[in-house]
Structure formats: C-alpha cells, structure tokens
Image 1: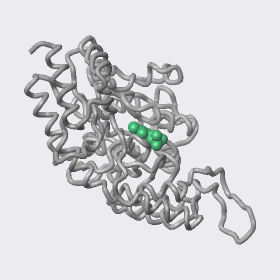
Image 2: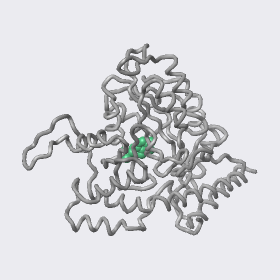
Image 3: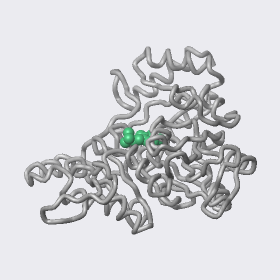
Image 4: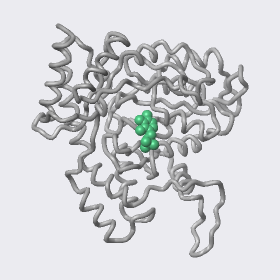
Length: 388
Ligand SMILES: *Cc1c(COP(=O)(O)O)cnc(C)c1O
C-alpha cells in the first residue's frame, strides 16, 4: 500500500470517528456528567479551597477505585510522586531506579527529594521499566546492608524504584516486585497515566508500597489540575496528609508546624470536578477500549503495528499509539498527519537527553531508544458517537 494512500485513509478514518473535518487534538476532556452541579455546589458553599466535602469524598472515591485503603488528594501528580517518594524513605543523595522513557515529571519528583534518578531500560513489550534491566543493574552494582540497599560503586543508598505504566499499559509488576523484594527496595508506582488499568485483575497504583495518579487536563479524567497518593499504609497516608498541609498541628488558633511540609493540598473546587469525572471513569475506559479495537483493525489492514495490552493486563488505553518502521517513517507520519489537522506526537525524548539529567547513570537503553525512534501517539479522546 502506498504511503500517501495510507495517510489519507488514516486522516479519513480519524475524521469519521470524531465526526469532524476540523483539527482533531490528541486528547480532550469531556464534561457531560455532574461536573457543573458539583462545581456550582462548591461555589455556593463558599468552601472552594482546601477544606471541603468534595476533597474528603474524592479521597474515598480514589481509594475505592484503586482498591487501596487510603487516598490523599494533592495539587498535581508531580507533587504526589514527590511526597510518596519521601514517605517511601527517599533522602538527599540517594539513588532511585526508574526509566528514561517517561514524562519529565517522574525524574523531577525524584530530583525534588535531592535524589538521583538511575535510568534503566524499558521492556519493548510494555514500554515500562524492565524487571530484567533492574535485576541486571542490581546484580552488577548493588549490595544489601542492614539499613537497605546500596550502590557499591557510588556508595549511595538505592532507596526506591519507580516504574511508570506508559500510556496506561501496565509493567510486568510481579517480576519487578520479586527483584525489588530481594534487594529490599520499595516500589512507588507512577500510575499517572494508568488510572483504570488492571494488572492480573488488580488496579495499577495499588501494586507497590505507594501509587500516584495525575488529574491534569490531558489525563483520562481531570480535576483541571490535581493528583493523588494511594497506599494501604494507614500511617503513611496520615503522614502524607500532614506533610501536604504544611505539617501544621491541629489547634484552634496557634500556628505550629512540626516539620518541613508543603502547601500541596487539592482545592475543593478541583475536587468537585474530579468527583464528577470519576463517576464516568469506567464508561471512559470502555469507550477507549472500543476505540482501540477499531484502530487495531484499521492498522492491521494497513500493515502497521498498533500497540496493544499484554495478555495479563487490561489497559485503560489513555493515549493510543502506533509503532512505525524507523525514525524516518515516524517523522514523515508526524509531519503529514499534523499538516492535515490530525494531531499526532512522538513519544518523549529520553530523559538523559535533557540538560538536567544528562549526567545521570544509565544502562544500555536499547529498547528505550528503539521505541523513541518509532512510537507515535494518535488521537485518543473518548468518542461521543455510538462506537461502543
Ligand atoms: C502527567 C504525568 C505526571 C505528572 O502529573 P501532573 O499532574 O501533570 O503533575 C507524572 N508522571 C507521568 C508519567 C505523567 O504522564
């Protein structure tokens, strides 16, 4: 099939799905449930800020959705990860294992704790942190001591491992957990993109010691801006709430803060929006999975690889993507589709290409570089029409 015909067919296919000839973005939110009602309630109550009923309601909802015992509402996913890492025991000078193929926030949250990201390769199948890469690194560099795992070459403590479930596709968690347990390293899941995804029937975010979600405007459900930490550790969750509300001791009128806290609490106005959005999460996931099936059939006919979930997972298909032949194919696909008003975007540049992370340790990155050259996101918004 000619390249040009394929591009034209793709453009027509996407325009048909979204029933428009106008510009089609990668991902837009939809507010067709109780959003207006809840936001209006908040304004009328005057409790728009960090005290209010929707914040509490949201924390209950997110814990329930992720099948954990507690959720903590915060201002965004980045701050959720920053605080979760601190609670997992990450301290200044430590090393934290993660992937270079991720959004910059994953590494930023590590750096905000004064720790150094160690970039290990992803699996070519999941596009998330590879258990084999982690095992290889630890076998070569690590040693378990009384107070945790250490990198014997640098002398630094390795205090956490942060896998990221890329575009909603779960990592091979059990294999990763086996390795991390052996080396006494807690796992903090960056589940910012994978709310609603299941791994072996369990929600991502509930698998590690801590999980975090993002409710930024482009995620599967949005608070405008927002995030959450989820965990089964009740004490840690209380501490997270304390830390994210300036570590203030409750008192009728005195100001007393017993440690260095943050002003990271989610405002009630945002919580109102996300409560209404969460009510629709399951429908959105179903809708996206139906769209993924349509795309899969389309690209199969064209001989192009549409990325699918692993057999042990049920992905939320937050952002869908294709894998093209090479960087040249990728670039021409990006150029021609964007030129025709269909937004497409390459996967992130690997984080060690960015100035603040270029000096960090990294392994061979074979799979990450392979995917960097080939993966392109395609329009993935929930579809209004009767596709489902
Ligand atoms: C969106 C995202 C975040 C951060 O979320 P914000 O709410 O924008 O701070 C973190 N990690 C990954 C992988 C993300 O995609």
